[in-house]
Length: 389
Image (cartoon, rainbow, N blue to C red; front, side):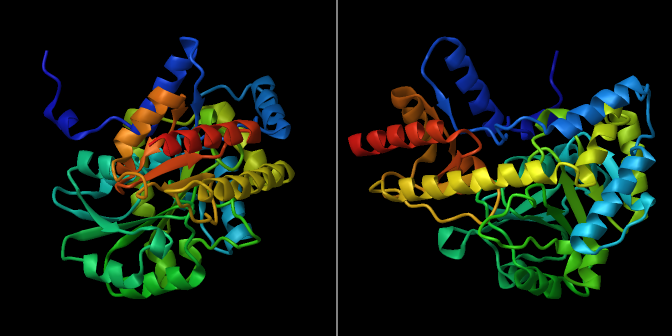
């Protein structure tokens, strides 16, 4: 048997691989602390669990429309209008099995061989892999902690060629927690005016913001950006529903939704029906009080973790404005993030993700989506490891 050639261009998800390795070592009885997974340690809010139970009782256990049930799509529309004052119709929305699935569908229906997708680095590990799998070309724009891990409009302008089809933004960012301001998004939008370039805006962490800062959606900054932006979102992170598998996208381009629906209909069909009904509670704000409890706790953890990392000689860490990750600069110790993480796991039982996996060497990603005692013990072990080197 020969595996198809297309699989040679697809890399294993590093974050999932390290998380699986940490679980395996822990199952063997080893003392492992894992900060590799992008998963809240909170349980799904009770109101959402009860909505799921009620959906089962009411018999909502059958196939649904491929693109999602009307009630859930309407709740997405309500949410986008309420939070960002942007308006969509039912035909502008499609629900998929998580944001990763939404992105895969998008790239598959849009990219022709050789089309370029501009991706700022550090990036979520999935972005360039899906672009390459779709025969596209990832065009990476480098950033670092001196620029807050954000690209400028000027950098975007320089990266544009006749083959550019998509600009992919992630705000708040995984892995850095960087958040684009309204002014920054507006400037980027100005650069794109007069082009056919689409903006994919991954806004999965929008509810996890810190220091009282307001999140701005890419589609809300101008009429032109609204027309070219495909908003990708979901409820995995903000409402602690990672295992429920619910992502969605919104775009005024109905032909794009139709194409994705055709593809999804032949690949996965609809998202789990119970998840769709339960999601209505989250989208309509019924779990907002619990979301704020989680956000407040994440902010507390962030503050302690940032201070602790900056007290380790050789490591530096900027304050993220959103999400639940720190992207720690280790260049005062080594520029080899893969070896750093391998040695740390071996010697101290601490699992982190190397920055190289996110396209930026010399950093490591630390998830603070776990309890404070574990965070403090983990950073203590990292400090001991660094001092030993």
